Every structure is written in structure tokens, then in C-alpha cells.
Length: 99
Length: 223
Image 1 (cartoon, rainbow over the protein chains, first blue to last red):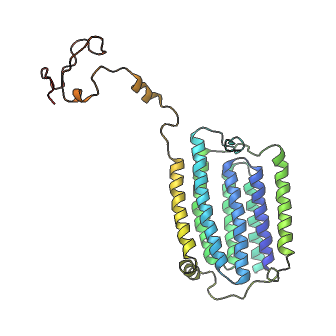
Image 2 (tube, each protein chain N blue to C red):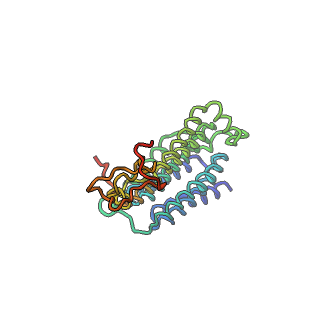
Image 3 (tube, each protein chain N blue to C red):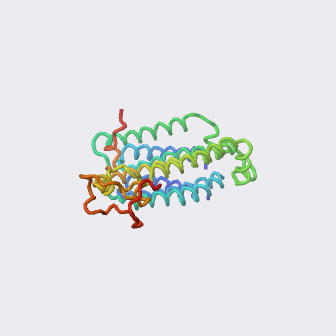
């Protein structure tokens, strides 16, 4: 398969994730959609690594996975803290930090 | 053969991604994301990224998804939480426009590599040995920084999610603090078993109950 097909799949996955971040209001699902966006970017990184025959892109993808794991940990910690304070679990209601 | 595998994996990945966004129950969204991740790992294998695929299945579809499932089970879900109003319409439109733009940008760029099958295969490309060598030689700094980042995230998650005291007022403790107590209780004099001079008007000094705990008679300043 040509590399272009993989890039198209990665673009579609990224855009589905971006649309989900905009549409959904549950912070858990927003985090899941962020994962989708990171995975789309990962797929294109790995595809470019294959295109150049260079493994640095795979290293980049692994680092992206580490950052995604950190983001999920902190985000889920925040969601649990919000739940403990009996606040609504809804990103539209949690707007105290909005400027 | 590789084309068939590619289309199966790509359709699986896109179906999983759509399922994450569309499904109402967050639990089903998590399951759809796990399916998406496994399909994506198959795509990584087709791109000869063996170690990345293994890490994807083990770390993402294993560990991170278990974390998600725990939090969804703790919080519960199932409310219909799609936003109403402007974003409900503009979000999908924005995503569609972005997808078209990205496809035009990548396929219309005229890169000769995009329409090829990639560079010639080097033996051992993407295996754990090669990736590990790169991590410990060329990319040592990113490797160490990633480990520090993981440590910071773990500590931060524990600090964020722990059970705090003092966020909401604890009535029991406050009632105990506010309650009147007999004079000289809770002091070193009481602990030493010393009878203190009783004055009129102190609470809890009705009938000589201020005798020391050892039952000894009044001693002044014994300590």
C-alpha cells in the first residue's frame, strides 16, 4: 500500500477526534477524543518513518505515547477530584477558569 | 494480501473512532477506543513498526484503557452529554473541513515518497533492538525527560485525586472544638495528676472532681 493511504487514515482519525472534542461535553469522552487525535498524529509519524526508512519517527511516536499516558493520568485525576467535590461532570459548566 | 489487511485495519480504526464520538455511554466509548487502538496496532505492524505496535497494545489498550474503565466505573455515566447549540452543528462541519484540507495538503503536496511504498526495507527496521539502541544513544535526553515526565504525572495524579481533608467543613470535629470543657482539663497539670485551685464560676468544678488521677492529695507545683 502507498504511504498516502496511511496518511489519509491518520487525517480522518485526527478529524474525528477533533470533532468529538468540540461536540462532546463529558470530560471523560473529551479525553478519549484527545487520545484519538494523538493516535492519528502517531500513525502519520510512523508512516513518515516508513517512507524515509528512518526510525526516528517511531521514537517520536513512542514519546507521544508517553505524553498521552501522562495527560490521561492527570486528566482522570482531575475528573475524580471534580466528582469528589460533587461538581457537575460537564465541561460547559466548569468554566471558572474562562477569562 | 497487505492491501486486504490494510483495508480491514483502516476500517476498524475509523469505525472505532466514530464509535468513541457517537456512543452515548462513556463505557462503550472506552471499549470502542480499545478496538480502535488494536486496529491501529495492526496498521503499525503493516508499516513495520513492530515495537511501536507492541507498546500500543500493551500500554494503551492494556494499561491506559484499564485506567479509563476504572474511572468510568467509579463515576458512572450514561447521561446524554452531547452539547446543544452552535457547537453541535459547527463541530462536525469543522472536522469535515479539516479532514478535506489535510488530505489536500498531504496528497496534493506532490511528494514523491507519498505515492510510493516507502524506503527499501532494512533488516531489523523497527525491532526492539534498533529502537532501544536509538533510545540509549541518539535520543537519550528525550528518554530521560520522558521518565521524569511520567514521574511528575504519577505524583500529580495522586495529589489531585487523593481524599482531601478540610475541603468541606467537618461538623463532628468542629462540634468537639466548640464544646465547653472543664477548666484545667487537657493541660499538663491534669496529666501530672495535680489538683489545681478551684475558682468560682469555672465549668465542671462542682464537687471536687479536680482531684488528681492518682488519687493523691493536693500537691502544689510538684512538677
